[in-house]
Amino acid sequence: MGRPGREAAALMIPRLREEYSGFDFVIANGENSAAGFGLTEKVMKELFSCGIDILTNGNHVWDKKEFIPLLDGEKAVLRPANHPEGTRGRGFAVYEKNGEKLAVLCLQGRTFMQALDCPFRTAERLAAECGVPAIFVDIHAEATSEKRALGMYLDGKVSAVVGTHTHVQTADEEIMPGGTAYLTDAGMTGGHGGIIGMTAESVLPKFLTGTPCKFEVCDRNARFQGVVIEIDSETGRALDIRRINRAVDEERKK
Image (tube, rainbow, N blue to C red; front, side, top):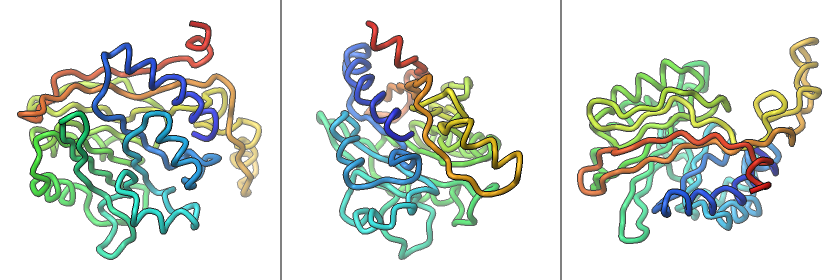
């Protein structure tokens, strides 16, 4: 979420690589990285320099119009796969690193959000077509029930289903019976001293008056949130899932 989130990523990703003896892939939902709304080419390159390998997105991927043409050429940047055929960019790709392969699928929910194609059937079709055992799914959705339903629907068909969009981390990480790691929402890397990444002062007038307001990115109480998942590359089954929630100021003192 904005500059505070980018700075937190630059600090924490190298530390977590050491703590967990390295990662093969780092995936981040980047749709709020540029001042809270969308992505720019400069911000994209900054995030990649932090150690992020793949950027997923959601409904804010279209906010910066100048970025949209880059979606066609950047394989490491995904938009929701359940947009209709002909939409610019890609929502699914297979990546290779350190001799390991991982399919990453980006989806957007439909409950309280834009009416796109069915994320359930889109995910099932692409998972069957990808040709690799390890499959990670980012479900960018508003409703907890929709994310949970997708997790249960895909249990045993993909390696992990992790939700994004609400900016509020949930505490329901688990490995489902079929071997799929699940977390309803990975949370938000950025300032937690306001309202879902924006300052309280800029957001509250919208609720008090019902009129549009200009939101400002919050830089107070920065936290790094996410999840570490271990996957068996031969079977695609998740072996472990650990939720991450670190105070950035405390980490800087170490």
